[in-house]
Image (cartoon, rainbow, N blue to C red; front, side):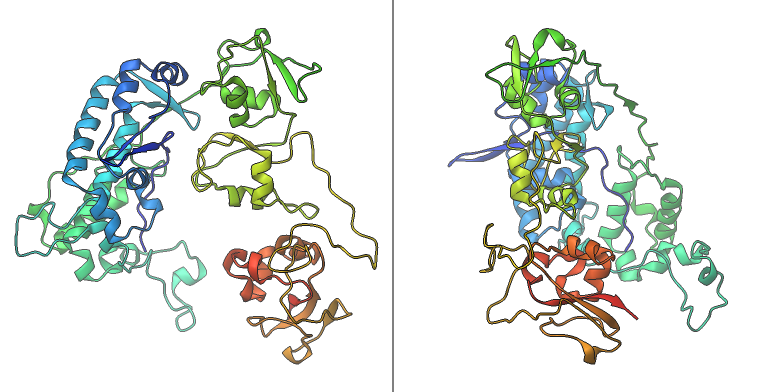
Length: 492
């Protein structure tokens, strides 16, 4: 399926206000506007405009900010796209454009026009609320939500030859050798989809965006768009297309710090003296300087912009820092921090980052978090042979081991079995093991999927492919990786 693009510059903190009488949303409902203006280095007038209250569903409007990141249901768009929300978003966007015209913010290391915050929300909202009647005045056409309809479109990125029957095709030897006909959109979708009001309208709206992606394919897409209008005899029905070049945002340079940390008897971490900090230091630059999470700096300073109101602050002990990437979650970060010696759970990750910003499913990209326990982690040694491991939190009724144990099973004595056919498979095993498996290994105490794969000199992806019960990408490891069961670790 052709994917046009996603927004690459994210949005700022988003929150909502809900009462019994109404539902409204605003960007910064609980933040002091004066402090916020200082933190973002924008005018108070711009902050007031950005922070306007909108009569829109808060969760759905937040989703509209990154509209392509979500699967939308019919009730989502009907609840979001109300007349009141439409009118408010239009007025809000115009007001922000006027009052923030000379203001800029720093987002993901770039200096971005402040008005683009509202602009990106407005663009996502318009795409979510696009219907097949937006450009049609015909009452005979049944109304359809284009975003919902688009989720059922089936096409292809390019047309690929069947190289098993025609190996002479040039693209069989070189997959990048693609003819113009094989990447023509008019050949990738049937005419019912291609010439539908929604397909043409959505392509126009994406091409007309004031926020094109970093990796821009405008030349190709404009050519395809004009071709589609010709194929569908729709040339006279569409407005003029205005193409914008990708914005060239300047890189923001963080202020330097005069780094100095001292200790005292009351602070168990790092005591930071205000006079040793650069006056222009921000939350992330302080976090980097002292190896602490961004949220911990905000908590210690009791300030969203990390301005010190006291002579000194107490920060936690240093940790290993990791910058949050776009679309990262608590679960994905915890998994990425796990090693062969330490399984980092989401609970562990949150204990290292008690003041993390945002929600676990939508963390603010650009913030810093701890990838290790502040002050270091204790990794216990392996238990001696023959000893019992009866500690640790139990999961699924097992004895506290990372690999779960199903009921009524007997653990075999042997831990490795090598063979050449499925008949030599040991017991117990689970369904979904590849028929080409030649080596099985038993899951031991303390094993988890990634560790088990590394200990057996295979990649996690190989483990999941050869043991499909573990799910794509290991999605079932928490529920289907059992202590005492055998898993395939080699194939013929």
